[in-house]
Length: 195
Ligand code: ADP
Image (tube, rainbow, N blue to C red):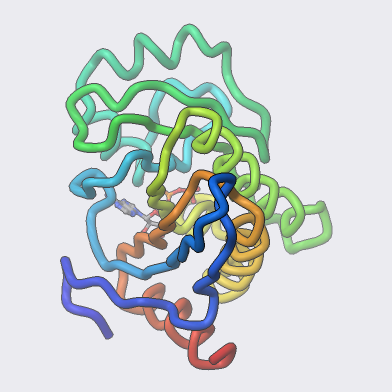
C-alpha cells in the first residue's frame, strides 16, 4: 500500500506513441493516495451530481478548495447528464481546469452502469484534451455515495483510460487518485495482473 502523497506507477499501461511532430512520446498512468484537491495537474475530474451545484464527498472537497467562484461557473453549465462531462476553471485549486462528470448510481449492474462509468472516463478525457490539458487526475468515480463496486470500477477506469491514451495526441499523464488504501490496492493489483 502507498503512503499518502507517494505515487506509484502502473507499468503495463504505459504507451509510446508518435506525436503529430513525428516525435516519440511516452504516456504514463499512475496511482496516488491523496486528496485530489492538492494535486498539481492541469485538470482534476470531479465526481459530481447532475445539478453540478456541489454535494458531498469529493465534490464537496473540490468546491471548498476551489472557492465560491466554482459554483457560479457551474451554474452557467445547466447541469450534466450521467456519463457526460463539462469543464470549468479551477479557480483557487492548483489545477487549471475542473472536469465535472456525473457517474452512475449502482443499482445492481443491470441498468447500464458499467457502460456509463466508462463514458465518464472517456468524456472527461475528451473534455480535458479539448481544454489543452496534458495531465489529468481522476477520483474513483461512483465508488462513494453512488456505491459502484470499487474493484470493478478500477478495471473499467484502467481499461477505458488505457484505450484513450493509446490515441490521445495531447494528454501525457493520467493519475488515478485514490482516497483509501483498498482503492490503491485495486489499481496496483490490476497493474500486477496486466504486467
Ligand atoms: P460518487 O457520488 O461518485 O460515489 P463520492 O465523492 O461519494 O462520489 O466518492 C467517489 C470517490 O471519491 C470515493 O472513492 C471517495 O472515497 C473519494 N473521495 C472523497 N473525497 C476525496 C478527495 N478529497 N480526494 C480524492 N478522492 C476523494
